[in-house]
Amino acid sequence: MTEIDKKEIITLPEVKEILEKVKPDEMDQIQRWTFDFVTRFSKLDAKTSRKMVEEQIKECELKEEEAVELVNILPKSLEELRSFTFGWKKLILTNTLEKMLEILKQKAEG
Image (cartoon, rainbow, N blue to C red; front, side, top):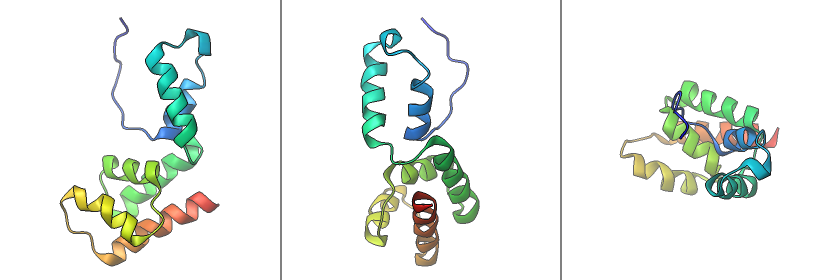
């Protein structure tokens, strides 16, 4: 059994980047399923996704878990964004939501 060195919250593209370093025939079943999932659902590269997380934390005062959730999902509208942030049980002002969307759109497009 492998020992855990550290725990980190990372985005789907970062998971994909880590698993790409493992040879497919050396992956266990869970790693293969995970790799298949992140390959299908990763919308960005790992570097861009991490920059987006950091910017969301800095500019919008989000927790890392919240920023990672947004980057993994990449909501495209205020309504979609509100549906995710509603579960965080904290009030987020519309101008902050707009800033969050702006960061997501800006980085995803460019």
